[in-house]
Length: 206
Image 1 (cartoon, rainbow, N blue to C red):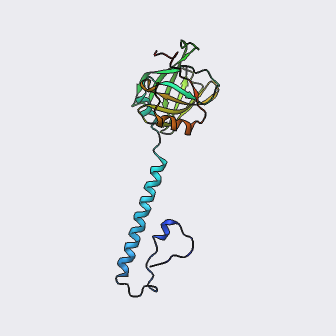
Image 2: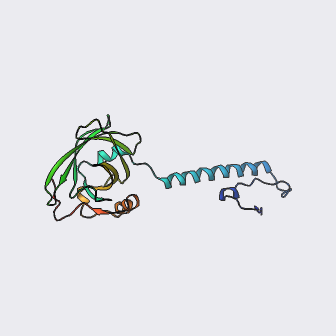
Image 3: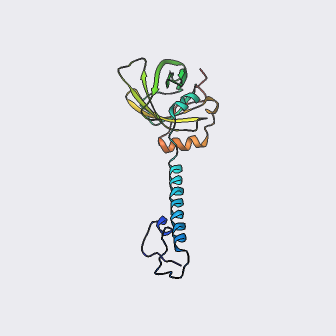
């Protein structure tokens, strides 16, 4: 048995080539050396795959837009803006041009719409980003970051609005009364503070 002295990375322990001086009678040393090299390459590939899997895939922002046509806001991380019963409606979507329009429905404390705000959305610099303009004001461009989605129930996103960056969770309406655990876990991981924006007693469908 070959002992490896000193402290070495885990991969290095498996990648020690045969030492002829210590194993003079071992036959086919070239084949054994090739076997060790192949094993090292295979281990390196497997470790790379594991690391990539742990990092996870980046969110596809326009796939999110395609999946969420009428989401509702559930949580945000600050009290900087009154988002009680905030909901959104996608009014335009062009997957080829990577463009879309959402209307935010800002409501009062009784769940009544008090203001509609338009967001014209375009492709961002990265796959998990979009740029947008508020109420047709092309002099101010903003960037939103899609930090997580399962493409079915929820989105965790950072949206700059009214002078603040809001870390928010949006849900499909069908799960607004029963938030999936994976969505809660990811929101807490990405945003931390959890301030409810949805109240089932006063937040009604638009």
